[in-house]
Length: 125
Image (cartoon, one colour):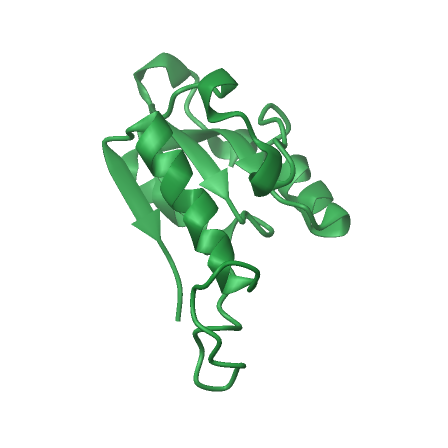
């Protein structure tokens, strides 16, 4: 998190965060990779405020379905945990098809293709 980051941030790997939630995955990625989160994408406003509290310098790019990846700052690591309701055995089992919550995975795949990060960290069920 920003309040515990080293002062020389230029040497840190850059992280982009999708489906960010409150930042649990980001915290782990920063710790393991010696990295800093430079932007995130979260549509749940109360949760995004928690994320912004801990990473005040990271802008929220908002809805993943509307992000222009060509205008997004490059990252070394892209992380995210796309919605699991449609792939979970306790969910609807609708799969990754378009129109499902888990189908938002396709937008993460588009981001990976456009940004070409060195690392991709995906969390799901």
